[in-house]
Image (cartoon, rainbow, N blue to C red; front, side):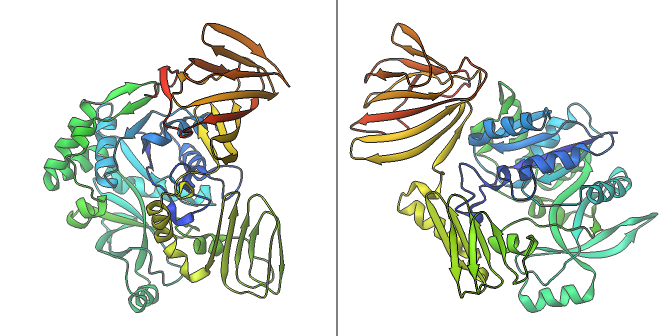
Length: 472
């Protein structure tokens, strides 16, 4: 019986703004080593004996980011299931279980959030294998992290008696919501309480049986969403009308807090959900003054602080316990203990309709990236990079004209009925209302400068006539 990794990648990671944003959330970023959190999660599970290809559940807007990151590490997914709307973890896992059980009803599902940091992959795999007998016996196993401090931002699991004939896992006596500090301190002191990691191991058929008993209407809606879904390239698109009938509910609320089958495997390895900038300071490599730094920084008389510089030099004098995060278009300054309020800050940016709350200056597309360089009244300048062999959609604009200047590589440009090849230092003009397409026929990235001019320069002024990536 193989282990089927199920990776949940639907989060927006706004608590790590401005580095993590809705269009490029934290699971796609590299916080530790050479791989993104998503890539590291997939590689950890791929190292398990008899592990199958992963099933990934994701936001529709991130589908090509996931495909690209899988390609970078040479892993092919069993399926990438796209959620048109978020419905929390219970419906997501129900759909994954339905999909997997159609091929293998007794399959073991290893459920993994895509954005957790676990540096010791070998210890992770050893604990998963230790939990396999309990999962085979019909238990819904959750992995409880040995608490290193009294954390009030995590839920806790109370550990009960050991399972009969299984010293690796114990019954769960209680799931506890995020506690007050005094209660969290008592949990740590008693030693039988563990952080709820959100990682699970269970048989697909057992999970579905408990869902049928506890959440029959939700399961029926999930079954319909999958049955009425459609294949699109390498993705499965769920039916939005069916999914809308699902309640938004976590797997803890829907099943684990109401089942007699919940078990816990306590683990000792280093773990973090990287839920805040303070968490990154906690796990970071600190200097003699307790500071964690990334990028170009110069500090004087600074202690116990976190500094992240992405594009320029950041300096500080005479401060303690703060967080400073610099990106090309936004800077965050916060006390280290106040970073849980970042989400409220992002909400304010959205109310003010500021794009910095949602997207970065560099925006990823399935064909490459574009980056805003400058803008003003009736003009915008972008730097566009097209991957080798990739091409943009055949499109036109109602409100803008475009100049393209190639700075690196070779471009094949369709402009109306004409097709021309451009190389470095050559340019072309796309008049308003003319059908056009940009392609990179070469073997190196194509880089060009685009100058837009017109009365409206929004990204929604695109009429697509044909698209390799099936975008509307």
